[in-house]
Image (cartoon, rainbow, N blue to C red):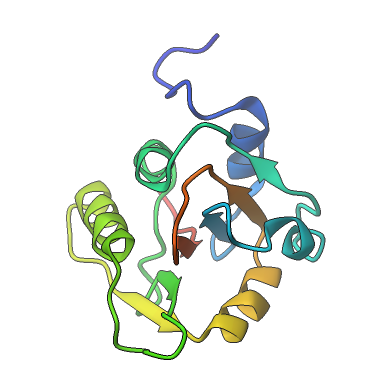
Length: 146
């Protein structure tokens, strides 16, 4: 047991976060995302599951350890709503609030079309699936430096 690390962060996830370097990307997703399929294409090569946890809770815990990239315009990417690129669903503002608080500043979030998001996710370091029911709870975060 370690002090100061949220217990929702399992050993595999903490290990993956520690292996990541500046510019590497982390995907946090809901249960609807084809996470297992896409995870095979990532640097880590396998899915990290955080069962029994929603996106807001996990993101809050992760961002106590994970700095966002300040060298790029939009260190956060999310999936667009299919058929309505301008539509908003509640999880978008929830995660926006989590990252803004964690970074103590407004953080730009870029919206990607569904299949563009999947291709970008394949380039990520790791995919972390939560038990969040969604929909559209799919986010890519670029790691910064401390």
